[in-house]
Each structure stands twice: as structure tokens, then as C-alpha cells.
Image 1: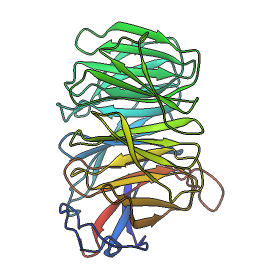
Image 2: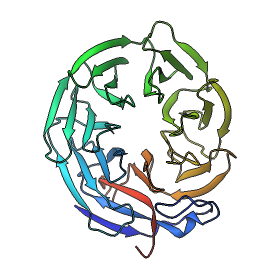
Image 3: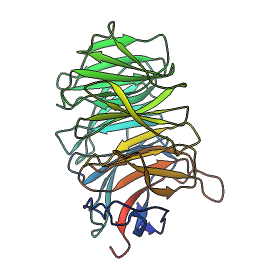
Image 4: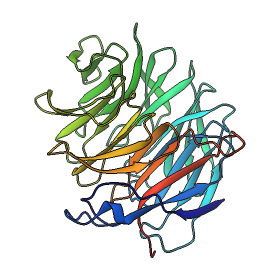
Length: 333
């Protein structure tokens, strides 16, 4: 395991230092740090509910959990989670337990890990899993696979409680905070909103002119954001299910999107050579983080203005670097 600070400053301003959201202070004065440990590229990064641990999932068949001081002072520790036999495509933490992380892999299984011991419980499913999300009360997990099957699991009983098969491409999925609405992004350019998991009675929102790939929920439960192959991110009112504005700085299909902990900023990324950070209320870009490769995952820390991001970075020999980065540290930390 290795981490180091890297001067990856970008253009723009507005925002705050690690741990503080202060309008007017400069995001351009903050830097990214690099974290090495995986043997191949990292597909997914996610913070635990306390913002003290970050999990990373890789095509090297492993996940890792990194203990990270949000202020950047103490030495980084990590634990390797081994057991999957294929790419770990997405992972997510239990919203209420800071040491329970769920991984979805192409080996047709999901695993629930204890991040302290590295032990896990395994649930075998029917297809190559690519998307996973927790319900906010921590009672259920939704898993989507490459065959467009959706499975809802009871976490305590480790049993399937609902299955849904779509006849179109299903991409990222999410629950609202209350847990009564379930959102599915689709390859048809619309978003399906399902009440109480009644999949046969969805509300369809015509969102984009191309496939919808990713979704993020505002932590204040006001909005959700959807990233699309048309290079746009749309911002929606959760209660009214109306589109409020779009974010337009990217030129390539949007792969990943995330709100910061105050709901003030949104970060989104693609194959463009930067991650855009925009003000949610004004829609204006406030900062851009340069990147050297297409991004697979961006996620804000739930307590601090720290943005984890991972992509298809390669070294000078064109081999996967297996790196992820965290933006938001002050240079003197």
C-alpha cells in the first residue's frame, strides 16, 4: 500500500478546505493525493457513513478498505478483501454501520464484508453484477446485473425478497431517503421511478436523448441527478419529479456523478480530461480537477469536502496503475 500527495490543481474557485464548506474560499488551492494498492484499474470508490474509511473495488478481483484521516495527518492503513473470482464492479457501505461494506462482482455473487476482520457473507445470484445500492435504513440491498435483472435482498436474512427482469438496459439504481421510491436509470434515456417496489407500475421520466448511466441522491433529499450518454447531467426535484436544470461542461458520456455532504456541490465525470464540480443551485462550474484518463467513479465524503475518484489510469508501460485519488487536501497537511 502506498499513498502520496500530488499537485493536481485546477481552474476555478469557490468551495472549501477539507472539512469545511466555505463559499468564497478557493478549491484551486487544494490538492489530490494518490493511493496505490490495486494491481489493476479501480472501478468503484465509496466512503463509509462516518467519512473515515474508503472502499475501492477493482478488476483485480479485490476490494480494499482504507482508513483515511479526513484532515490528511495520520498514516493511511488499508485491508485487502479477497474472495471474489472476477472483477469487483461496484461497492457500497451500509448507511448505518461504518464497518459493513457490500461488493458486487462479475463472478455472479455479492459479498457483505466486515471491514475490520475482512470476513464476509456471500450471496450467489444469477448474473454478472454491475450495480449495487443500499436502502437508507440499511435493511435491503438492490443489485443489478449485465442481463438487466434486478434483485432486492433482505440484508438480515440474506434472502431474495424481490426480482425484476427488464426488457431494456438497466443501469445505476438508487432509493430516495424515505425508502418508498426506487429509481432506475435506463438505456432508453428515461428514468423509471417505482413506488414501494411495484415494478409493474413505474412512472417513466423522459430525461435524456440518449441512455442514462448514473444517478446520485442529494443528501438533503431535495434533488437527484442523472448522468447520460448525451454528455449532460440533469437535476431533478425529488418530490415534483421535474427537471430543474442541466450541467453541460462535459463532451463525453457521463459515467459518474455525486453530491457533496451539504448538497452545495455536484461532481461529475466522463472521458473528458477533467472532473467538473458545479454549484447545485446556480448550475455554474466552480472548479475542474484535471485527470489523465476516463473516470469510472467519483464520490464525495459524507462529512467533509473530499472527493474520491478513480479511472482507467495507465503507467508509462500502458499497464493499469490501480490507483485512486482524493481531492480536497490542503498542501501543507
